[in-house]
Image 1 (cartoon, helix red, strand yellow):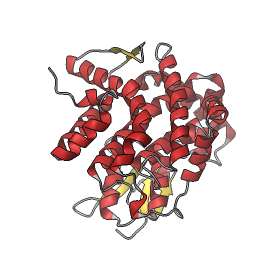
Image 2: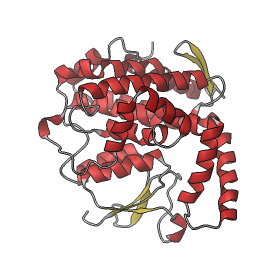
Image 3: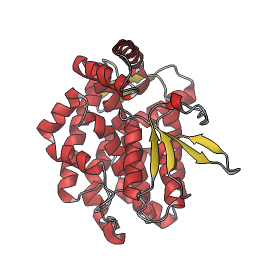
Length: 342
């Protein structure tokens, strides 16, 4: 693949920002399409998600491909150099775990803050429609503003943001800022001295939380300015080195990542397990306790698939590598994801 990759995305999409940063770091040429309507010749994805990449299928025809996690691994296999998934299977598994936390738990904070507080709702409503058409007439912008606000607020329940869960989401975001700041005091990236897929997943959500939405941004600048600076550095790492020995060693992982893994076990692991149980039982609501507080939301089928993907990666590990992962996860709460049912 030598031509520039073509993708449809938007500046307000954390997953678009995640993948653009990946492409810049990997030095993979790309072409970003913001106005999808101007390109009716492009195929339509089965699921409307951003970003959407338009890539050759096995028969050579373009197909619309979504989902950033498998795309990252596809690009690592198709483009040599500066890969972002570590070669060490243990570190690669932890990288996948933290990437999933960023994509699927930290996004709850992103969506919650943007559409729960009035100042954030107003900013989102004013800016998001202008990204879709910077020269559109003001009357059209204002109509789109109302449409976006009403639609997104009505969908808060999908990610689990409501009056019951708000304290859990906000407390977890506050702890994340502290833990991320401490991690960055030790090393410049989650996995050591070069970025992995986990870094880009966290970065994507943080482009909103620390650099756009007023409420979480104010908290970040007050409590974790190091994290705010890191987000700005992550925007374009095309000039950053990618030394082969830049990854953490296995001996360094517990000290560098232990607190972070503990936070995943504290909030995200119980959410995944409760969601999976609700889907298996055919329940209309996920009802559980997270961090000692009530949690209620509709079941989310995609996150059940995320859990199965993590379990598949875990069981694909060799015996020695799985034992190393078990030792790292022991007592964190994350280990509960991989315990066989009684």
